[in-house]
Length: 466
Image (cartoon, rainbow, N blue to C red):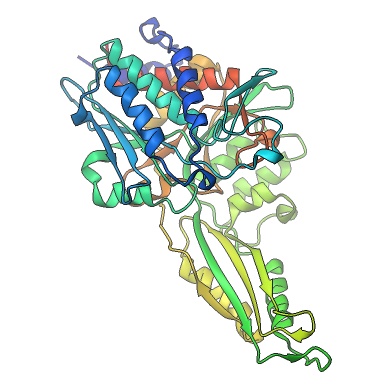
């Protein structure tokens, strides 16, 4: 007999709606309680960069819900930063597992900068405020709440469902790297779904415009550019100080544009996004969808930071240091350049391009961060079909568009380990009002409940339970 997943995909292709059998509702009170407890545990650097307390809290919840110790793994490379892996076992697995991802750490929040306490969940005017509400404790709370509820309901999936909650996505990403490379058996899966990528894009009137699914992300790499000089008295300046030589290199870097290079995801995004983008953007999007890789791209591309970043590798200076005294010629000038490299391109080629700009100025280039290749995930029908079907059950006719993320997530490490990753946070946000990493981070109550509903339905759908 065909599984529910197979029937749902066939129904999607025929334009039908989801059957009422999967219209059960998740438990928003449980998810809200979990989110409140997670926000109250400071997992930012100021809280000690320590995930032991939050992992212990979640483990208590899981054990109370009946999860066996064999299905809960709190494990990390260091004592302070345990990751948590949870498995909802199938009584009769017919398919390889699915991995679902979120992270427990957050970036720093300075209480004096916020209008509400950052490490306390505060509801106001239809929003939930607190550090991590959107990045990414909402995702973690949703995954844990749904897993607890599905177990309590006796959901019999036809495959294991694994939830991976990592400890240091906002810093080194070592938690995901550690699990993918040294404990692959805990997270090995047919594919992964990430709560830390993709979104439901809202317009200024808070109406949904598109469901964005992250299927690729750029590769992160940092370079240090350093100029040195014997120095001397500032009353006797020379033509080429360390600061001057570094400055000329940075100007060259700013004026440089890498050639555009479109992959399956980015070309698909440009061709589909035109249907929902503003009228003013459509000519540029049409030109991008038809553009040839290896060219400079359409006129005006550089004036659109988002589209420009999707189409090409970018590098920008993010930190600058120089000099040691106000009345002395600088002996050292140093800049950090952050590059976001397209997944199909080589970081070695990018370093060579920077070196070519730096060498005439006698500036040394050194790579100072490790690189994790992250090949784009294929647009698999067995993933795209259910993702789209469930999205249309909640947001009828909303276009589902693949996206190349310009940022970086734990998905890079999982993709690099050979597991395709798809970011489907399903959190509805206006891109112009995303406050992740910023002051007064928040998520709307309706967006939180909508994402909870989406993940609950998607988990049942992909789990194939009758």
